[in-house]
Length: 166
View 1 (cartoon, rainbow, N blue to C red):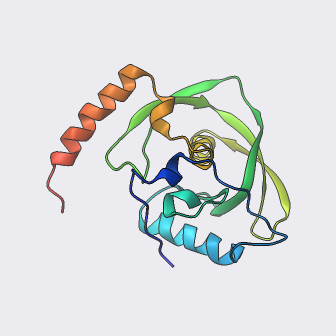
View 2: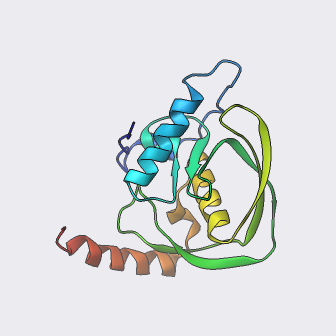
View 3: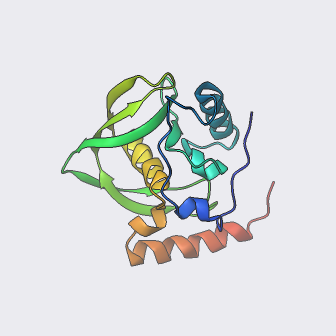
């Protein structure tokens, strides 16, 4: 099922999400995972956290090969090397901001069955994981940008917002 995105003003985007309890699931984890993936694909994103859809649990979908859904993720390790690249967000259309993030990360999480996993992510995939984990912690990528890059992105967003839609 394709879910609706909450508006930017919704407080859920700025609230730390609760752990997903596999011992007493608040909803079917397989249905949640499938809905997040379907919504991410329909909205043309490369990641989507549950709270962007009004669901307050620590879970997000990640465009990868194969597509993954990570429940209750935690950072196990990050590289000291950081890269400055542009990021966008489905919750903030037309806003593309340069953000510095670690190049390589290791993440512990649970899969859709509740089994513990650890994966290494590199480059854009690592960036996407960190972006979605920020969402789960009530943060968004705007807070990760320096003032110069944020103001530059806002000017560009105003231009993009004025474009006619197809």
